[in-house]
Image 1 (cartoon, rainbow, N blue to C red):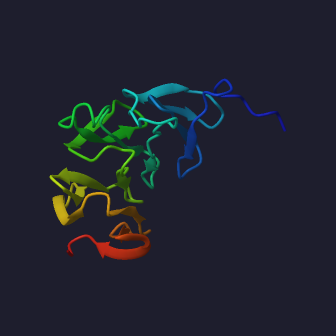
Image 2: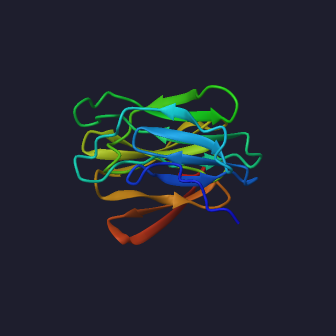
Image 3: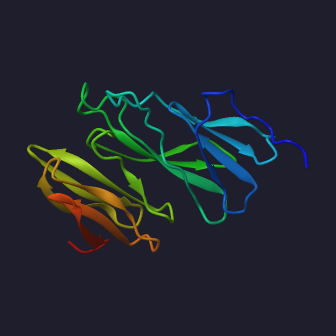
Length: 188
């Protein structure tokens, strides 16, 4: 067939996530998420944000999790400078295909380079690490569960790994990255 369209100039790409129905693609970049049809029409900026400082050579690019009906996607945008301003919030966003982004929740999380927030596969919940003195706390946030403190442990001695496909279970490591633990919503 026809050669594919180039959506962004070399070096300006990003991480592409296709909608479940295959009609759209979200292109996550360090300061925005673009949305377009897969034929490159309706190309527009779905949400923009300040670049997240990583204090390193890599750029933070947010995850995009589509709803099953392809009507919207969810994303988490960490604090712009969590070290420089520890009270700056991290935000959980709903981004509809038609309409404006909606800020669903704000919370204080550890800097993204220490632990990136993770969205459940169904897009309803987010797991994140929050600082608390010398500890960090694992929180689960969602519309139906509120902001649930799962557990706490000394900072930098544990971290999230990811969600199970059922969007209820999740994995984390503690003490050693080779020591994996499994938890689930509603159980400490």
